[in-house]
Image 1 (tube, rainbow, N blue to C red):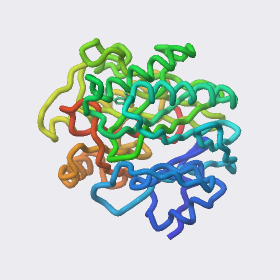
Image 2: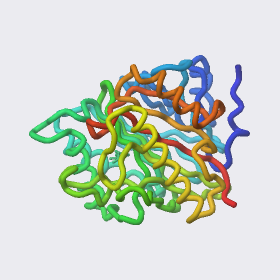
Image 3: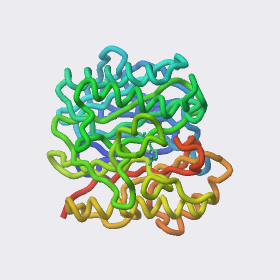
Length: 335
Ligand code: 3EB
């Protein structure tokens, strides 16, 4: 089976879930911006192979996530980062060995990330993914996720990139192994930050959730030369700033209501041509308990329909009471 993903998106790139059997062919495609292999990690197809254990897929046919670029891609190394570049955007990725001091690790990684993307001429971070093992474990008296937030905020602040109006969409999840894995999209021109009217902005969470609030926006709407993308951050069962509900089904309901609110906000503020989550281009579901996969997929299919591309991964959400987190993207147009 060959995959024609070029016709499924507008803008400089699109993402698709493709059968893992396509992996070898896709990694050699000059239009491959990234190939995300859930069991092995992320690759920029530049011939290097520092793969890591990552977030195993739970349920469904085994797929990988393919990022297809409209333009041919140029691959480079800059310091610890692997880069994939087109005229409009830069994809950056790194795997940082776990030193057992995640605050310092995050600070070093984000400082270098900002240095590289600025030096390369793509100064605006629009979407970031963060994965670290044992995210809810204590280290030096603090939960590792909270320490990660401290290091990330310190690094962004040091280079004046901790701007409440210009924070990227992000996800932060616990992985099954490896080190601190970060990958990101940066652009020459900034995106538009979208917040969720049902939630306190994460960068304003009160101190009880950690000494430094998480530095991310609920979504980024990015107008490319052609086409508009919406990148929806990892979204969970949080209303205001509080985690709600104990059962999987209730958490799924609240999560979907939050995604609906973010999509609605992007439609209201920026005229995004999408009103409801079932119109998104794809979603990714992170589950704390792999045993929840079958019920989660059935629940989501009932509400979002059969057609929406979806993958379910095992990943720990960054608050230990949360069972599920969902992110999504739309590669389309505004009205
Ligand atoms: C939340 O809404 C859930 O720290 O970058 C979601 C997405 C979450 C991104 C991050 C954290 C992050 O607070 C957790």
